Image 1 (cartoon, protein in one colour):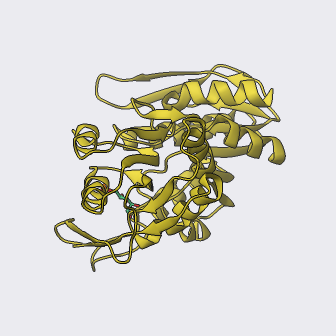
Image 2: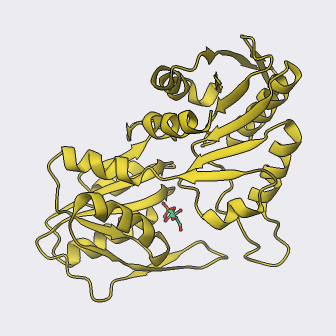
Image 3: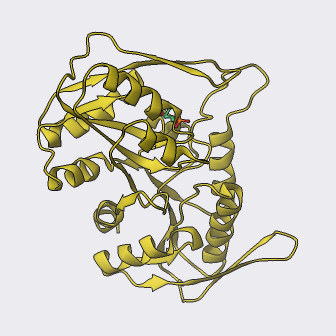
Length: 293
Ligand code: R5P
């Protein structure tokens, strides 16, 4: 197998190459003056199984998706046998159903586009809803980075911390963290107005008084969910509040708002390279690719 370094995940792809021992194929990329993307493979992939590592986080998630599709096409035209897309953060994963009439299912459109470009298999990390992947036109799998994030907190001395999910849907994430942290687990309730996007959070039967609490979620976008959860935790007497998320998009001033809300540290992964990407997905992805090769 060879690892193709997508322009959006160059560092991660190189780390995966180092950890797997699979050679790395670099990519030349540029954006034309009119905004169109250009990519070119700088290595031989004839007869090879290749994995293209390319996240599709903001900014310019559409451009990153097109780079991925163009790379898959380039690899196939250069004679690659099988193309696996490794997409740590999958854009549009939250539009996985028709919430309102007149909508489409964006994530399924993306998958069909990727299939047409030459992608044969798909690997992602903590996709928003796992059932999405069953509708994809190729074998697709999601891995969980939560044990790695929980381990980060263990190394900082937070064994026994309370693992909190900000809504019922992410309870599976909190439970995975609890397995590593060894403390209690619980969730808040959250409802979202589909027209305004406004959310309302409530706590029922939660006892976090005097505890160190780690709020765990798949995605932080505007930060509203975490800010709301932190407010409830402070009201309930939590002693320390931390936050672990797989995909720290942190749009606008989300990071500042979360820290201002009393969260002591935000920990994310390199699915979204930036200030909070303190946990690398390289070991998780490497292990999976080595098992597949
Ligand atoms: C939603 O169900 C997700 O798991 C996240 O909780 C959500 O996307 C976070 O969005 P925001 O940071 O804008 O509240």
